[in-house]
Image (cartoon, rainbow, N blue to C red; front, side):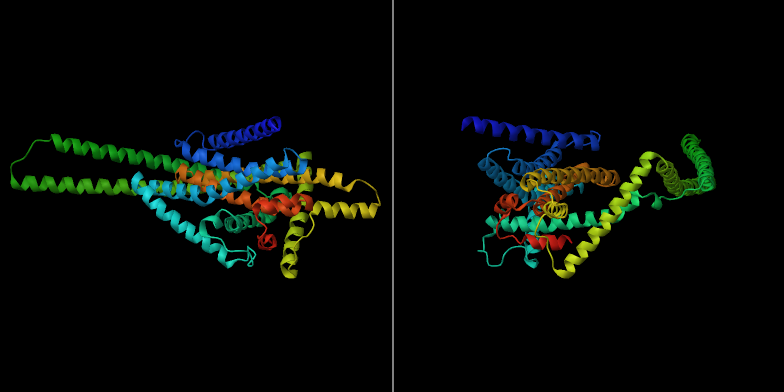
Length: 441
């Protein structure tokens, strides 16, 4: 018993340490060591560790790794920690760092964050009342125990499945556009040369105006210095005349400087837009050249396959909604049954189902984690200058936690029936899983 406990504990601790290290290192690379506060980085790594732990437990369930009691205990611990993290810790941290960004003191930020957390809990609870997520005949639970059981899981699932559906819908349209050379922008060399010429003219104009601006500022500073050191005249007329000339000259200089600054700012905006357009044309030209290579042709074939698959997914989602249909058997089992029935081959179906399910679920998990982290890096590049790093990291931790928790709920249908029992037991018997698949469609 102690040997089994030691082995299982060593596997769990080692894997969790690796997950935490990966999250910490990834965030460090994304922000290029600009994240001075380590608390958001800890929250992100902790959230990623919990999410990867759920995926790992699914793999362990298929492969039979660890004892069944150990897996069940880990499922329950990870799920409770995930719900506490998503419902209490991360929303409070998000409010706290937002108030700090707005210049509120730490003490007042804590007070306002508690108020924000209470509003979040009220909204979070109300979200689930309009959806048939839990069996209505199930016994009602109080607020606290409900949040850490089916009620909490169901509400996290609503938000997470909505995010997954939005990203999947975007991917169904963007994937063919990305992989098929047919959608590549045909950049002409004459258009590229014209934009390069305009860009060069703009840069020369900006440089000229900056020289004029520097000269105007230098002349204004010289006048201020000369006026401070000039001898004082005692006649009334000379005093008023000198004062009028200085004020008029200074106002003219200030107007000229402000006008030059506005012109430079406007030209720099135009230059930025031209640079982006030029970069798009160069990238399109490179894509066209790449499509002519062997690797480019393979990408085109891959794009054709994904295009057909995306059209199939859109059609099946529409049919599922229209016919109120939900898949009762996982795609692997269904495909294998059809294949064996048509080929009339006798093999150990259970053996192959286990291994194919393992490969399929592993592929789904790896591509989803990679896709989410790539999206995180792209959005971070857009928001880095507008919002503090701490707020961005906490926000993505919250989104990531809900996204991956909901994904575990949807992965359930891709598992054979013998592996679904543990997920049903952990997430709750009273959750209406069919609703989430229809909501996703």
